[in-house]
Length: 233
Image (cartoon, rainbow, N blue to C red; front, side):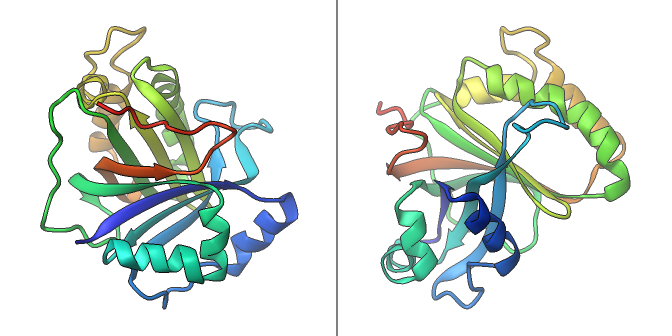
């Protein structure tokens, strides 16, 4: 069964820069469906700040034909061995909104035990260059909403130049995540996300965009000295 994986790792600055331009993940990797190699960003940070784009912090989002393909990659591939030393989570697909080329959405869908089960959300999009200022205007308030929401355990953004942007978030429960999406959270300005989605429907920011929801299967390693981000019910 197809699975996804999300990886975070810190690399030396110049090695991270080199890998941005050297495409460290081969498209011919056995069992790999698609991958996106990105540079991490801090959600909600000022656009022109050192915390916005975190060169040296790498996020990799991947889809695999099966778990064995992922395991072989982490054990045998040169860059896979690098990723295995960081933090990563294995993910089973639940739902998709929108489309993004490269990924092949499975027909089989995982089921959460309940709406109180933890869930992982990934958004990924290719931006229209002329829409970037408008996207920033509507997007940064949403970033702050997700970053500061009491239901999030880990959240970040990432970018691949020139125009790929993505977010990753782990939620304590599916209910808290869906409440945020629909503007029902008991937080300040709860409709920031729903308002931004209405603006996107009015005039799209992206060439392509998708939101993917996953059931977390298992996590490995540490990120910034922490581990066990996924709650155990």
